[in-house]
Length: 331
Image (cartoon, rainbow, N blue to C red; front, side, top):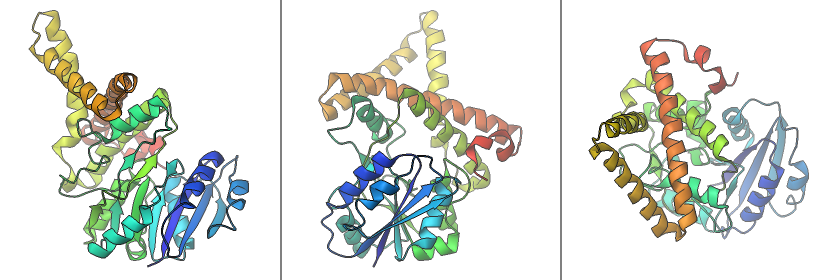
């Protein structure tokens, strides 16, 4: 099996240098290739790639900007391997990653897998807090954190593998972004293919974002889900409504507290206390645990409000997703 690592990049040469440096440290003894797709960047990573061309098997392509999904498709068409592994440019790869993937595929082959993400000690406190919010079983991030207590796993494209066969049959990623990875997973299910979580195949996902960018990101995630529910209604779940229910419930609990009905607000207080203690147990830092409360609040509000807005326009008003949310689609 020849692995092709597919990495789209947009204006982030420093990230590519860090990613390639980690790939140089892999303990994997078999051949693998790296395919880097520059998605119309104005600040390219070509110079950084040149530094590693004599040390790693790297192909570099520059193309017009068309989004991460289309760039991954472009890279998979150019790749020589028969199994593609997709990373975001802000990932750092553990030394045993490919060895773990090869073992997992040997034990239980699937045409598509996804792995969790983790935080390095060198990450900033905000990055660690966001990572916790995006991976904890106490938030909407249980899947990314490595939970297998779900009937069908939807890999995320920051750390995702797909066979050449699955890519060719499915046509790869669609034009929606974000949401292109669960959309592809569902189409693979429709083709009779399996997706699976490989818990040991984790990456360190840096997420170079601030609070404002984090809100924009999760808000787009929330908007994308009702669109996917419209396209694939049989895969819709009540759990997708949870962040929206959470923020509506929180507002009502505040209103009830005005009238001295404190039970519901106390439930939310208990939840945030549990979240803080869980973060403290993992991070051993009061500061990061406090930041986790901010990250989780942004996560729930951003996703929940985006979901409600899209649900109303797409499911209730029956509007065309591309017309009402053009920012979610690449042409």
